[in-house]
Image (tube, rainbow, N blue to C red; front, side):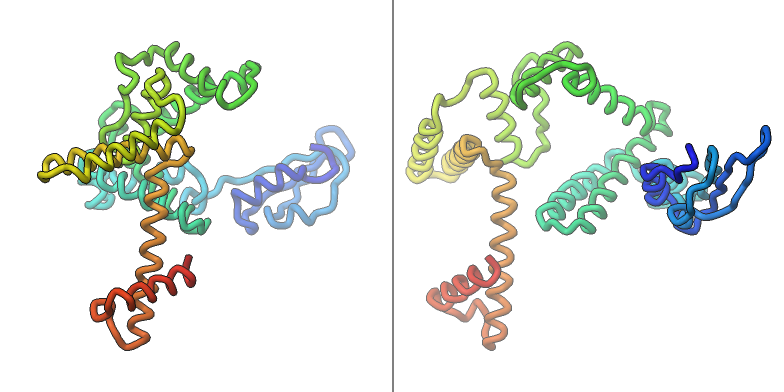
Length: 321
């Protein structure tokens, strides 16, 4: 770069990746053919240096792997070492099967962190989720199937291919057209399914799976023409549940009610799984507040009558939302 100083974008990237104390050498041209001047400094000092005349370049020694903690390659090396000879006994004995529960748990913990909205907690939980991806990828690498770079390569290839409006100059007018093109491109990749419902994971939470099944069915025209149809169907299913006499029939009718409720929520543009998760958190906040209030009053919830409980509930709603 020219003597105008270290470009701002380069400086910002160096400051993001390297400690301020990390050594760096600024190499500048001086009078005379092939003459250069080498000035040792640090990443932190670079931004404060005055511009040098002539052309300049930087020599940046590599960070030791155990200091380059923001690098994807470092995380990959750590996981490989944990599972390698002399690594962690627990990590070494894990299999795809034994890790499944942790993958699911980390997904839900990440969702909880997103609901809470604390950036530090979100970053931590996304890291825990990424660990599961690295562990499964490392096990497959050990088996000779693929490694995490194949995962990234497949992801990048897919994203570029399915976004021609970004990477290939295709013009689209709105998000709906993007979704339509996405389906066409998936078919071109040979991912044509026998049923519109193929590929909906059985392991999804029930409300989330119901929503995806309904979305898939709606794409091929199996849907109410207006929201009123969804609401009428929900009311019908509620009546059938109330009329059901035996436990087997009640369970079946309750399933129909929940499925219909998810569909009504879809017409409102709502995700029932997300709404219930938020509702659960709201109930928990209020109930915990009730327990604290009862203790402060020298009593327990179990000793209060309905009127007392209702009063505490109202106070909790006002206090914690």
